[in-house]
Image (tube, rainbow, N blue to C red; front, side, top):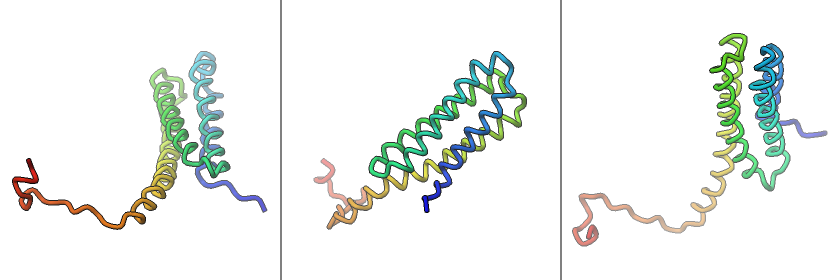
Length: 143
């Protein structure tokens, strides 16, 4: 039985489909300018999300790339809104909410990848350095 894709991969694919449908309604000028950029950026996000899921040994690297790809997609959505490419603000709002949800999930995945390394370091640490408060430290320590 094949493994089912995680929610973040499914959401990245959904974002791609929604952007493809939104670009269909763009005017001719925006369809081939902003629309083309949006579609290619959404494809990039979906591809990187899939690779992050599949390539376990390099997952942390792929998730790091995914963080930046989602940020780039958000920026492209904002620019498309500013040049009035969308049919309505509601269409833009629905897309930006989807991408924001995707960003939140990616942020959680990113933290999960990096917290593993931090926990291993803490487990290896035998003794924690004592932190002295300003009142209790002597003048000699502060010099």
